[in-house]
View 1: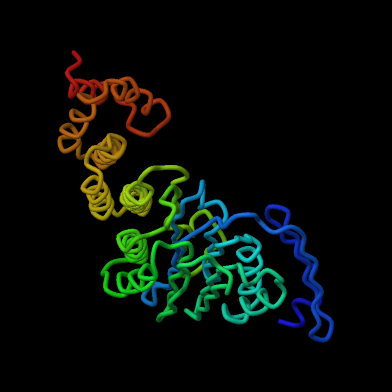
View 2: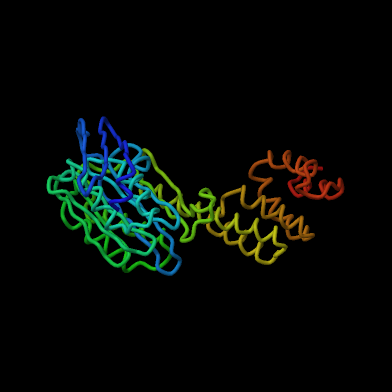
Length: 342
């Protein structure tokens, strides 16, 4: 830690806040300007799934676009939630330190030591090994507190009561399912227990894979934000379900590339089960069947899509021109007639 800080001068800012960190034999220099004038964020969870190594962070707040500054996560590195009188630099620098090999507790302790405003911060960090630490500042607005459990931490400030974070912990520990499902349960339990004393406005959820691929865009299993809604958790829950469906679609596409048709159809079918009214998924499922030579199975799916929106009929012949389905006029005519066109 000392060596890392000795070679780094970091300018970390939010709402007029600037932090310079340097080290010389353990001494640290701090320069901090004006603090944010109001508490921005409320309840959150950081967690790791021991079975998959996935890392996640989720949050809800009575503040616009909470997902832009509170949640931070990087595959194979860690996850951070920074809130209360928020300083997003805890996210950036926390991940930097963990990527350099520091544990989450060591990273958080170092940043707190260099922050003159630590008494109004609330921060939690977890690393890729599941080591976790949280900090609730002595001057965070009540009700405020946190609970650190096995491979997770829940934290909240500006709550209606002090039952919120214990409810989050119970929900996370008792819920079955993947990391996104368990974190959603924690957020929903927080709201049910009383939630933010000011109400609700925005929410966000991020889950990253356990092992980085070097392609950050593929390492994010979930990356969802609800910036402004009267029911942010209900909307976030809807988006989680939709993302699951698209994850199945992506897995199906990959299976097609690998010539595993049966797996592809299972994945496409699973997507449609999750969001049965999504015409996009039904349509591309049908296209995949055509390319597998299973045209008869595709026609009911095409018919369903075409009845709902005839623009898909217009699209279909265009696919042949770019090689996405066979360029066979008789085949195209057969598909189009599934929609009632003669």
